[in-house]
Length: 89
View 1 (cartoon, rainbow, N blue to C red):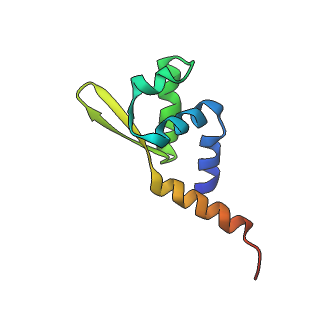
View 2: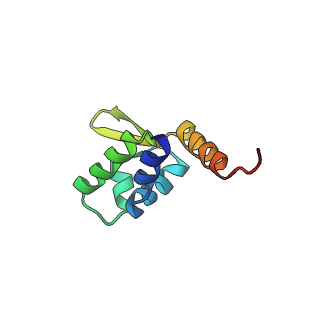
View 3: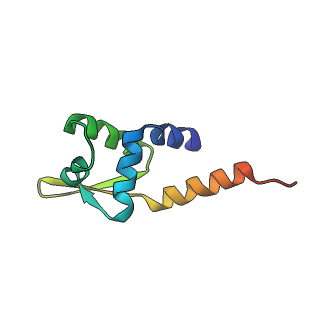
């Protein structure tokens, strides 16, 4: 279930752009929105999908919500993909 949910979350081009934005550092929603040509409601929807797949985490600071890439899940994803393609006995 983990891999299928993660791949489903990563399948959308907008979610891929969000992940690329968060690769560098934690960002508030407003900064993420500047990099995408979508409404804030649509951005919230995409962030919710990424959060449910545990690819990003969020924290509130005052009125702003900051998102960051969950690197431990990204590592698990890469490990799972590597195991899928591993050859041998």
